[in-house]
Amino acid sequence: MMMMTKGTGTLLLLLLLLLHTPSNPSVHAFTSSNNNHCKQSCHPTNLRNIHTPNAFLTASSSTQLHMMNKKKSKSKSSKPSKSTNKGFAGALRDIQMQRFEYTGTIRPGKQSPKRTVPTNAGITFPDYSADGIPKATPPLLPWLIDVKSEEEIVKMRAAGRAAREVLDVAGKMVQVGVTTDEIDAKVHAETLKRGAYPSPLNYHGFPKSCCTSVNEIICHGIPDDRKLEEGDIINIDITVYLDGYHGDCSEMFVVGECDEDAKELLQVTYDCW
Image (cartoon, rainbow, N blue to C red; front, side):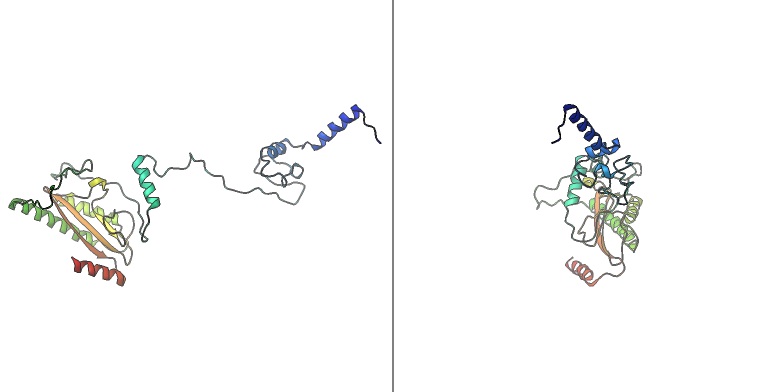
């Protein structure tokens, strides 16, 4: 039996520690800080010349060691928020958009800035033009009918005529490749040309001067940068505010040739009207 003295035992222990300690300090730092990722495959004796944790090549072996090459995830602070600078209303809209169940292929497009109406053009503004809140209230009882004077009826007819004229201009723009925002721009200009205010503009915050409802959009669609496509059907809803009265009308238009279902829908709605 080999007898081991105290001095011999201490020397042997120091020798074992020296042999076990890796010669490259960067390897030691890596294996200690990333022990959960490479307990077995990344043993220090298999790694040489490692300067960063992302460099994984063996100098003494033809075997290449790999970590999971995941792309660095962006921190939460660098990821832009959908509702940046929109406040509570913007955040609520984002939630609604994420959960909204679409019935077809139409999706909201990009909107241009809200158009303005000059204040020095002699145009009468509705009471909601500034803050979006209508001030006029309907009669408390539905059977109370407001009898108009002859002068008021003349003004109502003028507003209705102006709306129909603007609608005719908008309808002529319906063709493949035209955006609904371009139609809105034309409606805005034609409405101002007639000395009227585009009624939808800022009504309860509505951002445009007319409503364009394409395909499965039932009504009050917001004009945007989507281009009209062959086979689309579109409703253009025009309302103008002229001399204190709103003139309101809308019509369906077809982009090129539509399918039989769309034709039947158009015919039935016209017949019902």
